[in-house]
View (cartoon, rainbow, N blue to C red):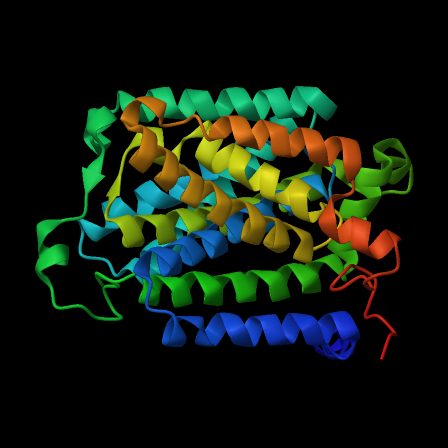
Length: 346
C-alpha cells in the first residue's frame, strides 16, 4: 500500500504527468502508426529498456558494473525455446527462463561478490564469452547453427496462448506490459529495505558492512532480480524472432553493451533514465543499421558501431550524469520515480 501511495504522489508531479502522457501515447501508438518497421523498432526499445533497467539495478543502485548481461538474456532465450519443443506455452517459458536466469545470477553472486570495481566488470565480460563458446559447441542445443521454433508451433493458428503472430504489434504490447511491471516492481524494491541496502553498498561497501548489512547476500539479491528481468527479455526475443543462436543471444555488443549505452545516455541514478536512453539510442541504432546496410552494402555492416563510440565520448565529456541527471541538476525537471519517495512539485 505504501508503494502505491508513493507512486500516486510521483504521478501527481509535473514530471509524473509527462510520464503518464508518454505511457498513454505508447499504448495507442500501434493503433495510429502502420509502419511495421517502426513498430518493431519500438518493440526493441521496450525490450532493451527491460534489460537496461535490470542492468541499472546492479550498476546505478548497487554499484556493480556488468558487461555480461548477455548470459542472463541467453539463458532466458534458450530456456523458452527448449520448452517450446516440449509443447510448453511461451508464457511459462518466459517465467521459467527468468527464474533460471535469476537462480544462476544469485549463485554467480557468491564468488563474484568478492570482485570489486573493474575486476567485477572484467569477470562478467569473460563469463559472457565463455557462455558464447560453450553454447556454440553444444550440439544438444543446436551448436553454432542455433535453434528454430518447432514446426508445430509455427503451423498452429496465431493465438495468445502460443504468441505465434507474424506482425510485431502483439510483441510490442508484450514488451511494453513487462516493462511497466518491471518499472513498478523496481520502484517498490528500491523504496524498501533491500533497496536502501543496495544503495548503501553502492556508496560505501565497507561502511555498509560495518553497519551490519550482509553485503554478499544483497549483492546476490540485486543480481538475481536483474537476471530475472533480463532472462524474461530473452524470452521476448525468442518468441518475436523465432530463431536463436549463440552469436545473437550471447552477443557482447548487442545484448551486454547496448543497455550500458542506453543507461549512460539516460542517466544511471534514475529509473526513468535507462528508458529514455533506450528510446533515444535503440531506434537510432536500428535505423543506422538499416541505412548503412541498405545503402553501402553488407561489407559495411557494423560501421554504425563507430557512431556509438562518438556518442559515448560526447556524453562522458558533456553530460556524464546522463540526460535525466542533466535536466534534474539544472532544475528543468524534478526527479521522477527516484528512491526515497514521491516529489512535491504540483
